[in-house]
Image 1 (spheres, rainbow, N blue to C red):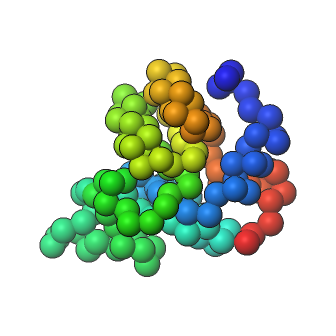
Image 2: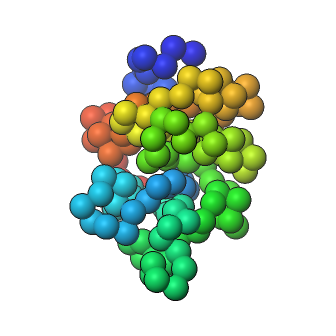
Length: 147
């Protein structure tokens, strides 16, 4: 697949088929992009699960936007449709491998995040991939209604 452009139908399919989103790199700090996108997804009717090992534990609180934070995708006890990656491109490959291991349906790499080799691995496992895009931009652009 060409990851420089995506058809509206491709993006719409992913966003409409997704119910549960694991937000990898979710931050408890309201000024961080991951926090704002997670809040947007919640308000749009998606179930979100924050994934950030630095946000759990005795000194970190453990909750982000009312959801219990987990340390890794493998710690999630329910089916995850989409893994939304807020990590540097260099770290995205490891997250994609975790997404493959939990049999996620979709991997979404945020603005500025791209790893073509990881995308190819995911696609070889039947996982649809989006890179360098933000669902909080695409949902309103596509005119998708809240759930």
